[in-house]
Image 1 (tube, rainbow, N blue to C red):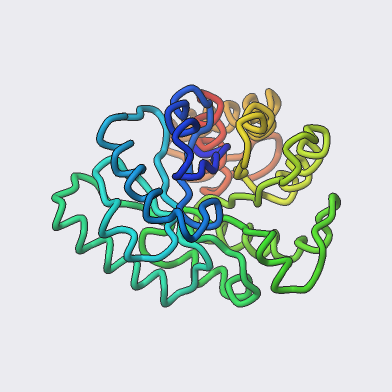
Image 2 (cartoon, helix red, strand yellow):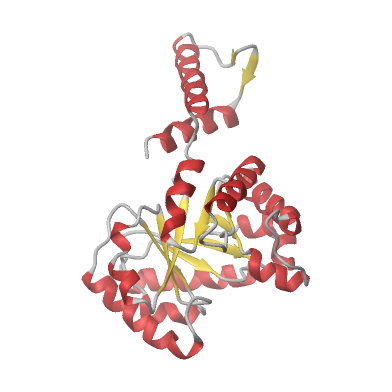
Length: 275
C-alpha cells in the first residue's frame, strides 16, 4: 500500500546509494524535471548501472521518464512502475504498447504499472478517462506545473488546486486506484506539511509524493490509519464473517447497512495498518 513516494534525481549518485535507508513505500527515480536537459543521458546511464549493482527489496521502484524512448535504455526487470509526465489518454495508450513490447523483448516476469502524472488543465478534466487506461494504478497530482498553466501562484492553503485535487480523487476512487497528492515544496516547514497532508487526506487522498527524505516520516505517520479506523474496520470484517457463517447476504453494523465498498475499505485499512 502506497503512502509515501520519494522523488530522487537519477543523476545524484549519493542519493541513489542511500535509497535503501529511506523509509518511503515507493521511490521515484526522476529523469524528468529533477535532471537538467544536458545531464539526462548521463542520468540514464547511471540508473542502468545502479539497477545492475543494487537490488532493492520492500520498496516500489518507479521511473519518471522524460520521454517514452527512455525505456529503450533503462528497461530492467527491477522496474515496477513508470510515472508518465503530462499524461493523457493518447500518451498512455502509446506507453502501454511500448511496455508490452519491451516486457516481451526482455522476458519480464511481471507487468509494469503506470502512475499517470496529472499536471495540465486538460488532464484534470479528463482524469476519469486517464484513470481507466490499461496499467494505470495511480493518479499523481502535479500542482506546480498545473499552477503555471493556470497562471496562478501556489499558496499554503492550496485553494488554487482544490478543484484539481477533487477531480484526481474522484477519478481515482471511481476505478479503485491510488489518489496521490502533489509534493509539499517547502522541505523545512514540517508544520505546513502536516496541515497540507491533513487537508488532502480529508478530501480523499491516500498517499503523497515527497521531494526530501525528511518528509517521509510525517507522510507515513499521517496516512497510516488511526486506531479508531482500525477498530471499526475490524468490527466490519468480524460482522462479515458472522454473516457469512449464517448464510446472510446482507448485514449491518451500528445500525448501518454494510455493502461491498465499505467491506473493501475495511480490508484496505487493515492491510495498511500492518505496514
